[in-house]
Image (cartoon, rainbow, N blue to C red; front, side, top):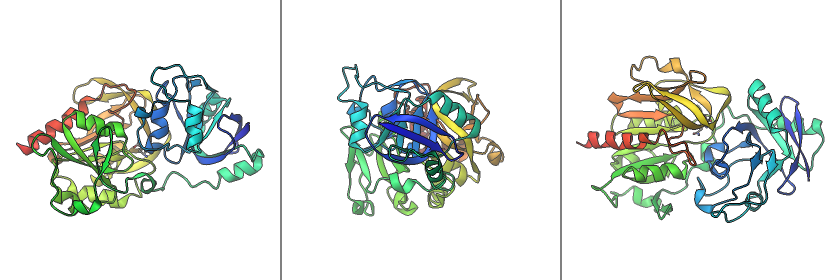
Length: 380
Ligand SMILES: NC(=O)CC[C@H](N)C(=O)O
C-alpha cells in the first residue's frame, strides 16, 4: 500500500506501508543500531517519535515477547528500507508486521532511509507525518507543521506508571498506592539494597540490571511526592530514562532537589538531565540526537573508552555545571558533549547513555555495581 512521509521543512519521501492503512505523526529521528528493533519500539523514551533504522534489513529475527522494554509499543511509527517478513530465529514467536498491526502502529518500507537520515543530519530532527490516505505533498507538509514540537513537551505523563510496582517473575507486580503512605515493608530489607525508581518512562532492562546488582526495586509514578519517597526510607533513588524535553518537568526537578544529599542517587538519560537541572545546570535540544549502539564515551576518571548505546535528543550543557568540580565524569568522543555527571558530596551520579542496553553493548554495565557500592558505603 502506497504511503508518503512529509517533513515540516517541505521535503517528502515516497514509501509503502507493510502494516495496512494508517496515518501517524511525530518527530522523525534515526537510529544506527543494526539490531534491537523490538527494544527500540518498546522504549518509552521514543514516545512521540517516528524512528527510522539506518540498517537496511529489519524484521529478520522476528519478535520475542521477553525482549520488551515496556508493556506496549511506544514509537509513533516505524520506518525501514526493507522489511523482512520471514523471520529465522528459534526464539521468534511472530513477525514484526503482525506485532505492529496488533498495536495499530504504522510501519513503512521502501523509503530511502539513507536520504532521510542524511537530511535529518543536515537539517536536524523535525516534525513529520506519514499517511496512506493523504498522498498530497502540500496537505501532508501542512499537517507536519501542526505537529506539537518536541522542545517544551512534557511527555512523561503519558508513559509513567499509574501504580507503584515491584519486579517479580520478569514483570511488574503492582502494589496498591495506599500502602505507600503506611510504613512500607521491603520484602528483602537487609539482604538487598532497597531502591525507589522514579518512573519517567523506565526501560524494563534497567530494573533487571538493578536487581542483578543486588537491589530490590520499587518503581513509583513520576509525580510521587518527595515525603512519600523519604517515608519509604530507601537505600537509594534511581532516576529513569524517559521521553521529551526535561525542562518542563519542574515537579520532578523539585522532587530530586529535595531528595539530593539524603540518599544515594543514580540517573540514566532523562534521569541525568533532571539531575543536572536539580544541580543547577541547564539543558538544550541537540540537532539530530544520538541514537545508536556504538557511541564512544570517555570515562574521565579512568581514561577508558566505553562503546555505548544511546537514545537522546536533549543534553545537559557542559558549561552549566562548571561550578561542580566533580561534575563531569563522562564525555562523548564524537562531539565533546556531556555524557556523565558525578557529585560525591551528594552521593549522586548519572549517565546520558544506556548501561542497561539490550542487545548491548555492555561496556558500561559496571555502573549498576557502582550504585550498589555507593549505597553500601552510605549505609556503613
Ligand atoms: N532515553 C532518554 O531518557 C531520552 C531523554 C530525553 N527524552 C532526550 O531525548 O534527550
